[in-house]
Length: 227
Image (cartoon, rainbow, N blue to C red; front, side):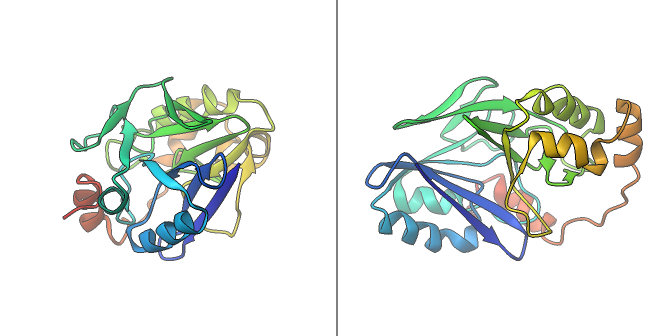
């Protein structure tokens, strides 16, 4: 299997390229517009055909590369069926599968950071978007986010996965490449709570500044990064 992890320093975004092998089909998760050429170069170097590009949610801190990748490769754009973006090629439902070649990802509806957030499970790893971060969780104070939804998505869905499941988030701000469900359950400070109310109290008092690009990124990302 080919598994490439790209990092955007400006927004601390992780992008993932997955394929079952050289010369085969590929998919990309959470692409950043500024790095589309890098993705294309990697695809070409491995003789890969990009057939699907996935966003876990409508990002607020960077412009997605979905539209540009579609224009350049004629790939299919994929998001969860709760997305407010109307021009997505495929809106996938909770528990359905995104399939390419020998790769299969299960779509799991995990709202809380935003109302349309999905995670994607692939065998021994899960791509959690901003729902579950390494040592943190996605903020819940805009885009119809809700701390109680976040608690439910994390505690009643994600943390029920096998302990050794690798966690690959859409962002990391501390140089971590991945974590595990067990590590997050035991060591993530946001998850050391006894109730949903206690978690909501933490999330409702983060008082974080808005992402710098939010007013630009959200409208663009509703068009999959197109203008």
